[in-house]
Length: 284
Length: 338
Image (cartoon, rainbow over all chains, first blue to last red; front, side, top):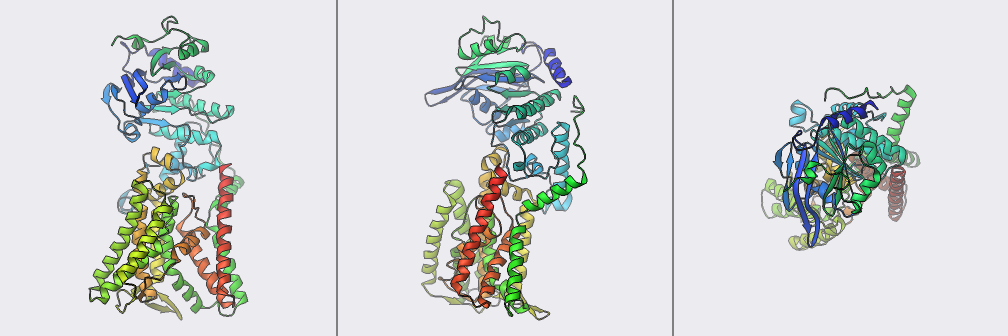
């Protein structure tokens, strides 16, 4: 659990966005409409260095649109996104990934028939050096296996053989491979969209441990989750999304699950809870 | 990222027997072993039951008879790996033979004829690929349409007659050499060569991995940044080029371009692919399997003929083999999904 404490220390050392460190990822006034449906209305977002930020919200609150905008899957109609203070606009998830933003999806993340090493390097294969690589386009399977094994070991994922096809793994191990891939290539941050939704309790615990280890490396994590105990277990801050915008950012140490649910459903005013970061109240 | 917070628990070194068990598990998952065993069994049975099967001459004949279907089946394998199917490959190759032969018969240059033929097959393969990737149409429907169109085009172009070919260049793959009394055609070497090239491309290059990924999990492949449509299109273009080679080989085998030839070649190539253990659902299989599958069909035909069994029973045997192969694939995919 020392990693956990470490993660905490990092985030407590980081004060709020006003006057604090530059957020790793920051969004202001994001809006997106699909016809008459406004999925995102002036939404703000801040991810601080080294933190685990949970994003919660009721179904239809627009959190998936927000996440898609941040990961490049959706282009917002209005608003701006800054990565380490620099204005960015992603036309595809591939562009976001090129800037070091990795996303782990709930499912669809891996090709089951391919082996673990191939999956880790899918779309980013290492080629052999020299003529074999440049002329004959030969991939360096040994290097990819070694590096895959190294990445999994570093994250404490126990898999006997990276040459195993992913389909021979349990659900939790499969998701661990997807998370390890994100951790290996995510240089700025990792976004995880409900990574444990399809998993059992023990397997979820495995993935949560992974998130802790990634965060302990100093890589910030955005975790979208419906599971409140999980959110309170792992998050440094909780971004509550409601009616297409950020309603509040709550600190799990100062608030209860009931508070979060109350803000999510609109039963409580975030101001009255003393919630909301300076950024959330910032006048525009 | 210099250190991690805790020393991660390192993987315990696998004991020897578990390593052996894993190796065995990998071997059992290797899909070519089943087809290879079937091929060996067929060869042994026919060698024992007939006097004429296990001769060098017959082996040479089986190889020669397998060359055109084998080349078509190689293109078919690429497409099936992306979860597609090509019903038009035989018709495309036939059109290729007609383009080549008619040009030469009309007094044209054989090399130009060859190039024109290959261009025609590549264009037709590309048309299928564009329809599949740009319009998102199912490969089955696209290539069914292409089959009908190409067959009609071939007859129109040929003016419903056939074109005998005397030119040595166009007949090249039917010639060969004799090694220890066995006649080996250049086409046999070409077949082995192109299978080796595509074995390499599929198993040792990033492109090959992308082909498998696109067939196995298209959405996951797209999300990892693979240009899935371009990968699929490249497969149809490569298949078109292979059909051009198949056309050239067909003229070497039978030096006569006939618009009514090879009418069941599309289904025969699918049979070879499926018997070779490649999954019709995409993402699983290998060109080595297809080569073995092609040989199994060739051996069955030859062996059953020499055992004096009616041609129709050969079709019965091949059909049963297809159903067995697909059931095995289903069973292994279901086991994998658990």
